[in-house]
Length: 232
Image (tube, rainbow, N blue to C red; front, side):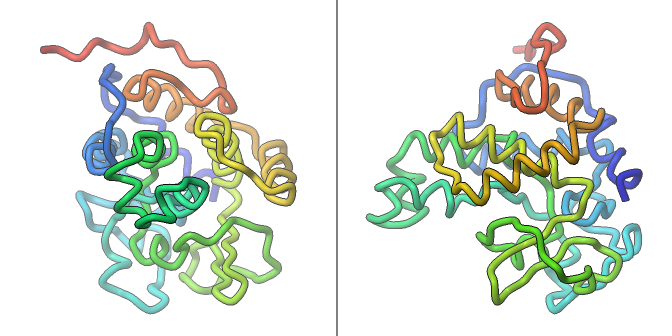
């Protein structure tokens, strides 16, 4: 399964330096070309072309929503719900109010370090559930190794992406002052140690840094001199 993920982010488009996206809509627009050459989604390792998922490429079987399973959606590793619920704006009007009136929320919602392409059905099933270790064996999505426990409101991601998830949570917690529970921090520390950054994750960090203007230090150092200036 790790081998299947290696193409996820190892073949980038040419590095270029942009301003960090100001909105989620802008972030999604900038995200497409970041993944264009390899076109592999996050939770199951499926290949995709344009917005359409090749379910056979990873042995994916739709759980319930076959139409949504066939399209790519952009997933926040740290959900917008988690980001917003720690801010006053959410209490006064939810996500829309935060996006309209809270600059810090907009920046966090649009952070490309926290954004990955996902099979739409898995994105919907994950919802705003937290990640956890679960005893269940993968079975809901064919050969996809991600597990969703709807009753417990927990998700166990496949092994190949656990370390990246942990390091993304640490990064988002530091940059946007998000609180992590003791239980979550212990889990992510264990995952980050058990699944250290691979070459594909380091390359992704470099590529995203060239758009955002900074990298995720939990993944490693980036070299901003490698980023070509955007042409006028």
